Length: 342
Ligand code: SF4
Image (cartoon, rainbow, N blue to C red; front, side, top):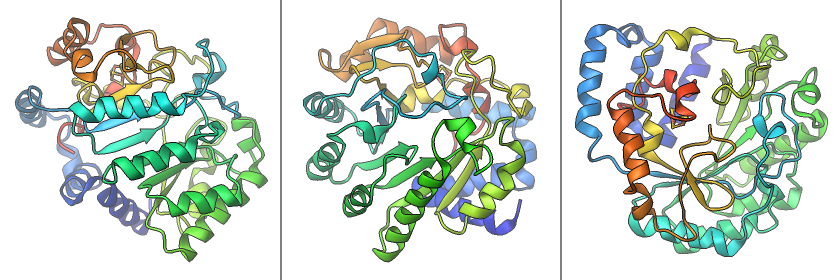
């Protein structure tokens, strides 16, 4: 991995998460100090940090699925097998949910993401306007496959106050169509237009380009990074999730994480995840919304997070009991050795 790329990514992480966390993450993942992670002495101190933080930590991220309709057919996404009703969250419900959560929690970041393509929502820009006007300090994060971008939408997005946009591209000319079921040439030119306008308008919006590494694109990862890295603020290639055991056909490239120790899942404490119907669910791994803790169109977030069902889950996690629905089969938890300190 070239140094320039590593420093660029570190700088991007600093812009998103702040300097202190960036330094910790850089030291513990990219330098000599990475060797101490998961050692006995590290685990001893890490367990102590978790114990200290766990009773006082509050959610900082609100993740809302504005739609679960999607125009792509990604082979590593459970959308293809998802059975829940497909719809778009209406503007009034979106406002009600945001107001509900922000009344009780000090949310810093709103992530608009779920199992859908957010730009299929005709009220998408109205939702952004609402946030910009009512909660100007709330950082907005968008995840999209970029295929629905038009020149007009690009120019509109660049005029709004948005902190970060992630374009999930997941392939190159050779394999993008097979992996995502979309047209590579069209998506590429839309993203290039976006990046060109971002540069011209000197927009501060951070642009991340991501790829999930699977067997079909594994050999192209370095070319992917080489092409997009000089153009975007960040390029990330990830190993995929198997969505808590749901996708048997996805060949996991790296097994390294399975050797790590499992820790309480930071997501449960740090993030409020809301599906398209307003249900508070555990996290995005529960793509069918099988485990619901309440609905933000009926209950307030305080009641939901203080409900017996939610408290039992947190308590089990805190005591290292991960044998609960979805979590038991989740592979995300094995990446968690830095979560509580970075
Ligand atoms: S352990 Fe996995 S399934 Fe459970 S809350 Fe964390 S990310 Fe979600």
